Structures are given as C-alpha cells and as structure tokens.
Amino acid sequence: MSGTGRGASGERLPLWRAAWVVARRDFVAILFSRAFFFFLLGPLFPLVVGGLAGGIGTQVRQSVDQPVLASSLSPEENARITAARRNLTENGRLDLPEVVSVEAEAGDTAAILRSDERNYGAVLSGSLDEPVLAGSPDKLERWEGAVAVMLAEARQSAQTEFSSIDLQPTTSTTADRNRDQLVTAQASQLLLFLLSMLLAGMVLSNLVEEKANKIIEILAAAIPMDAVFLGKLFAMLGISLVGITVWASAIGVLFLAAGNIIPPLTVPATGWPAFIALGIIYFMMNYLLLGSVFLAIGSLANTVREVQTLSMPVTMSQVLIFFLASLAVTQIDQPIGIAAMIFPLSSPYALLALAAQDDVVWPHLLGLAWQALFVVLFIRLGAALFRKRVMKSGRQAKVPRKRFWQRGSRAA
Image 1 (cartoon, rainbow, N blue to C red):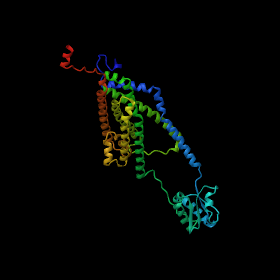
Image 2 (cartoon, rainbow, N blue to C red):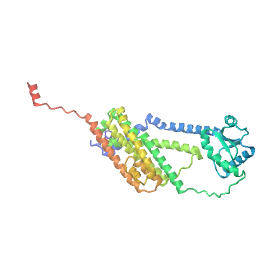
Image 3 (tube, helix red, strand yellow):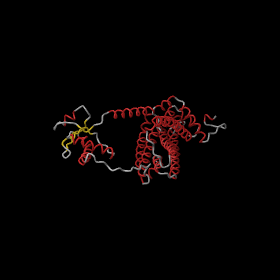
Image 4 (tube, rainbow, N blue to C red):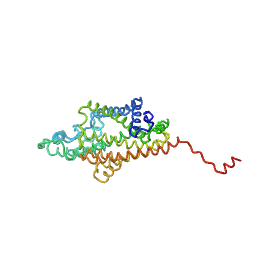
C-alpha cells in the first residue's frame, strides 16, 4: 500500500521513495487548488500598478513646463547671452536653462517672477559686468554655476565657436563594465531575496495547517519523519518554480511589448546562460535552506500565533543576512566577502554576486556542496524536534507505579 508509505511486504518505504510520495501529494494538491491561482495573480497586480504609476508620472513630468531664465539686460547683452547659451549647449553639450529675453525697468524683478506668461525660475538683471540673479533659494543654488558659465562666454564674444573634436565612441570600457556588472550583482541579490522571502513562507503555513489537522502525525507514523520534511520541502520548491515561471513569462511579454524603451542589460562575467542557470540553482538552494529552517520552526509551533512569534526573528535575521551579502558585493575578494560566501544562509547571495563579476567556477561547486550539507543538517534537526515535541503526544501515557505502602492501604 504505497498510499500509506508501506510496500507490499508491510515494510516502510525507503527515504527517497517516501519523500517522493509526500512531494507528489503536496505538489498536486496545491497546484490544482484555487488558492494557488490567486497566489499567482497576487504579485502581478503591484507590477501593473507600478508600471501605470511610472508611466503617468513620466507623462506628468513631461507635460510640466520647464523653468526658464528671464534675462532683463540691455537688448545687446540679451542677444550676447542668448548666443552664448546656444554655443555652449550645441557645441559643449552642457545642460543649461533656457534663456528668455524680457524688457523690464530696474526693480521689476519681482513682477517678472510673478508673471504668468512663462514659467520663470529666476531673473538675470544688471549688466554682464555686474550681473544680479534673483529667484528662489533652490533655483539660485542650482543655476548659479550655469549662469556664471554663460556670462563668461557672453563677455568674450557672442560668435565664439568651439574647436571641433573627432569623437570615437567605443562599445565599452573596463570602468563601465565593472560598474554595470556591479549593478547586475546587486539587482540579482535583491531579486533572490524578494523571491525567497515571498515563497518560503508557504512551507511553514503548510506544515502548521497539517499539524492542526493531525495529518502530519499520520504521515509520520507511516514513513520516516525525515522523508516527510524532505518531501514537503521539495513540493513547495516545485510550486515556487511554477510561480516564478509564470511571473517571468509575464514580465518577458511586458519587455517585448516595451521594445527599445528598456535599455539592454549588461552581460555578466559568466555570460547570460550560465548566470541564469546559477541564479536558478542558487534560488533553489536558498529556498531549501530557508525552508528547512522554517520547517524546524514549524515543528516548535502549534498555532498560527506561535508561528508568527517564532518566525519573526528568522525573518529579521534574513534582512540582516541580505545586508551582509549586499555589503560584500563590492568586497567580494576581501574577508567580508569570503565570510559571506562561507556562512550558509548568505552563501547563495554572495556567490550569485560573484558570478556577475567573475567567471571563476570552483567557488560555485564548493559553495553548492556546502549549502547542500546544511540543508540536510537543518532537515534532520527539524525532524528530530518534531519527533521530540509532537510525536510524543501520540504515545500512550505511562501509568505511574504505586508505592508499596499505597498497595498496602488498598489491600486493607
């Protein structure tokens, strides 16, 4: 009877076969449930809302008139500073505020700033030799340097032209490549952290639910507890990979629809195929590590309230571990980076960042073996805690032995 975890001879199934039975049962039950369908839709709503909000914000920023600089100098000086601004922006590639010539009498600076004709941010008055810039404090701080450059150019000549420079753009430089690969490493760490924290909690909720229904005790009586924990962990991992596949497909469709709006991503040091493969593997290992810790917590909790109380330190520690791995990105070959790769819970983050910046292979092989070892240890620990704290509730209580004087009193 394989459904009860025993073979035809009545003996228990081997560990891996029993784990497969539990994993298949949980995977099918969750995959074809209505709750899982709504779980898949959950993360897509923030993406849609964020995309709409970003598009609306960009449109609003583009529709707002940019502030301009009003120049109330003499007509000749207005022409010179306008020509200077044109020369500097066209030839020097400088980002300077637009200059609009206005005619005003001395002392009309406030009236110009209150005018509704244009979105005036500041007013330049006086003369080229003794200029006066009036406006709000933030505009003065922002435009002081730009106005000084235009004044210096206007004092020389309005017709000054810059010498032509032969531009030879290159595809990439070492500095650009290192910077972009660092951004890729940080982004991959953040994605790994968000997916792990979002999906690993399913292991804990599933275990507590079956503990409340006494299903877990029935399974534990039929098959080894290690197999129960291992099967549940891999079933939740399979469900998580299904969810990630759906979300990645939806995001890929959005990227294809966006076209050239999204800039091309920098190729990591290991190349995209190897980096994506390592990213999937490190997500699996990080999920197994975090899920096995949650299973150990679930063995100590009897109610949802206890789960929240016990899982809070683990969640907070995960944030600290993520900060440690993020700090190690820029010091991957320093002691802090090596420590992050050795510590099992931060090892997937640190090694994924290493894959984005270096094409070395042996640390990944060693790190995966090291992480697998701790997955086994955490599962064994959780199973031992469950047997000690939960399975003893199904044993028959020991009848206390009576003392000899109690026997005598009963006989009397």
